[in-house]
Image 1 (cartoon, one colour):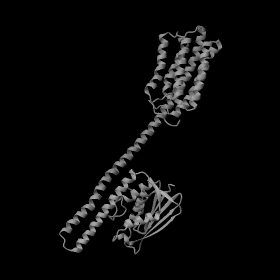
Image 2 (image 1 turned 60 degrees about the vertical axis):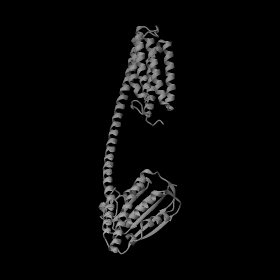
Image 3 (image 1 turned 120 degrees about the horizontal axis):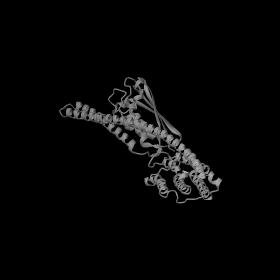
Length: 427
């Protein structure tokens, strides 16, 4: 893919940027070669003309490969071709023609048109122009010397070449400045991303500290309570008090079990991938109600009504949807309003081929408007009742996020709460 960045020794240009740069550079190279060769055509120096025509045609071939996406090949081949052309022209026309000056923009431009993971190949493209220059000076520019030029003609060629070199150098300076500005912007984005990551890591670290503290405290509390009740039961002779202590121990252990279940759900949501299967909501909700209403529990005071309109098969992760239903049901049963004559929970489900909408509407104690935005935070408790772990709604939101769904709530203190969950059908 052309848009994909190719990471090499120096990330001066992306693959797409190199393709655009090569396109411009090939056009400019052909134009400069033809322009600086006008004296050769004027004086009919056929040896030089043959090399120039062959070079321009070859650049055309490389241009075609570059446009077809063979960018690495085109860039590498162009660098080698120009280096060889400059060597031949310099050897033919001699030092005074100043052709060798074109090696300056070629050397500085190479990092922008070749960008390899193979460092040795990268350095090859930097070194071969230097090697050709060394050979030219070592042979006194006479290796392929032609004698068709006089001093005035060479002077004219040199003037054309100086103009060409200045054009190329000006273009390379423009490219370097543009690349520098682009690198600065990339660096700014990297710094910005790192700052965001640091903030996020600090947030995670703070949450982890709070998580460890809260978990250790909340796990120990029901255990300590149960151990204390066991000690009281040992010396108690009254059957009624022993039964009462047993009831309190059961409540403490149930609270511990709920907390451990929340931790398991929390871990499972992050570890286990989605397992898609067909879901029948009425049966699933019935199972959740049975699980959340043990005999003799205060939650039996809450009257539950259920309306399910499942118009088409629904495919989803039953494990995660069960976690959502359990937590919302448990939340409604825990925070009913014992001052009201009737405690009611309405569960409404509307499912079609696109999504399911699940509503939990209760007339419980409600939530203060100033606290509504925090109820999905980890370990947050909107009520002073010591029944919740502070994890239920946090886990619920995380699970729904995993399902690409949404959850919202409306609540009035003293009147009740309404949760609305929307989960897409995975059909």
